[in-house]
Amino acid sequence: MVQRQTLHFARALLPEGWQNEVSVRITDGLITSVESDCPATEGVEQYAIAIPGMPNLHSHAFQRAMAGLAEHGGGNSDNFWSWRELMYRLAAKIGPDELRIIAAMAQIEMLESGFTRVAEFHYVHHTANGARFSDIAEMSKAIFAAAGETGIGITHLPVFYAHSGFGGMPPADGQRRFTSDIDLFARLLESCRAAAKALPDATVGVAPHSLRAVTPAEICLLQELAGEAPIHIHIAEQVREVEDCQAALGSTPVQWLLDNANVSGQWCLVHATHVTEAEVTGVAQSEAVVGLCPITEANLGDGIFPAKDFVEAGGRFGIGSDSNVRIDMPEELRLLEYGQRLTHRSRNVLISQDCASTGRFLFRSAVTGGAQAVGVDAGLRPGAPADFVALDADALHLGRNELDSSLDQLIFAVGTRAIDRVWRRGQCVVIGGQHVQREQIEGEYRKMLTGLMA
Image 1 (cartoon, rainbow, N blue to C red):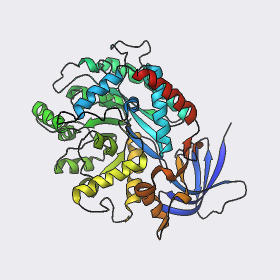
Image 2: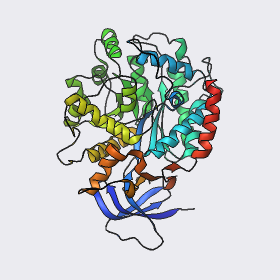
Image 3: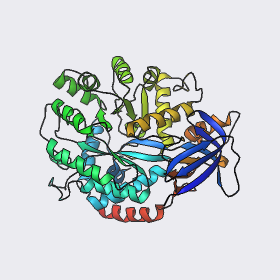
Image 4: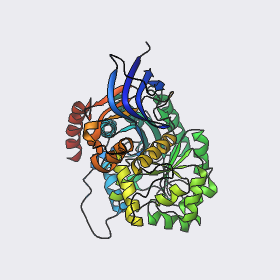
């Protein structure tokens, strides 16, 4: 049975910019028409301000369970690598049921903060001792099941992980749940693609974990397996990673990838924190998206990506919640800009000649880049999924340029308190800032987490 509905917004951010009195018609979860200067008719649902849903281009859902539990230690020895050991210990405890619950909790928080689709960079494939599940995609199907519960859009990225370091080093004990050879991974990928058909507009890409976990020959094979689907990779997140890559491959990670892989708009380079001026230009020219995760990058002490230079070179970027230590779409954008302000000792760094509002530039760029990275259209336009957010005008203190001010205040002042409702494929999944399934799923999550941490 065909499902149709019409929503009306006093103001809406369309691809061409802000428009007034916007009527959005939806059929079976897709936007079929968008009309501006169209007064609301009786019986039509009416809201104040509509903005597109934000794609979350990088998430490890299971890490939500350790949020706030790694904030102790100290000294120069406490860094990404020591954090990784704690993460491995958590990963060893999680089975399919636990993963489904953790992922559902994370996805609820994503939707409540304005993320409407998530690219799940998933590498916990096997049992705790490294044995194969009878269903090779058992853990991936837990992610799909969570998305079915919460309603979030899913771009699933099964991760190929084969080695513990450059030069094809054998995997460590803590990585036994992650590893595959190419044949096993091809079977996993096929099973994930079949499972994705059960969800509306779910898609499956390919994720070589990193150059330290994948050999050059394996990169080539993975590109073939991907076909035209998104390809995501961790790259240049840590200084030690860059130094090890130079020693093993004679090049920095980003430069090696540009020189040896067919990097294009199909790719998302996650982090790319430590890059040279030439690499900034090279990635921008490749049309690949850089996946920035400012909350996680700050939490792990990674460093700050040269976003100002990248934007000026025409580069494309999106944002992700990565470790899910805190899931907050406006804060990801705020920290992205603030990192640049601290680096350049200036204000309103990430803007463009056609957009003086930092908030609108950040938001517009992240929606566009994120949509490219997850492989699905976004925005309030005909043909796109009906994924959008209604802001509470009463939570915003709108000024002279009130249209752009709504985004400036969402990101820099009010935050998620301004998010009233969220629609995903035309279904209203967040009302009054709270997911419609929060009470049930949060209760299940708290019970599970108590047992897991015991």
